[in-house]
View 1: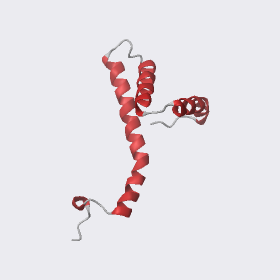
View 2: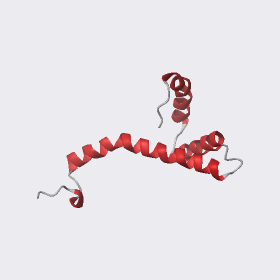
View 3: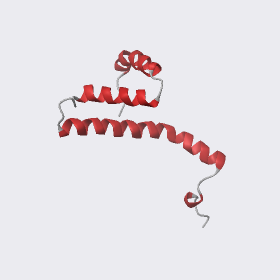
Length: 91
């Protein structure tokens, strides 16, 4: 979970915002994420546990990001209609 104490967020947020605002394309975002994980998880000296830790962080971040955006998907279903196969049956 990405929920850390407010004090810790305050320390990180300026650096994160500066980095994010300096990235101009998807390649740079990918590079930044890869470098952050490499440094934070110590994968410069590969070990299964370090690689597993980095992939776990990515997976959890991905799931949290999507969970937050699912409301957008629900809104679009309401606006545009659902895919036929997933509509609730009227039995």
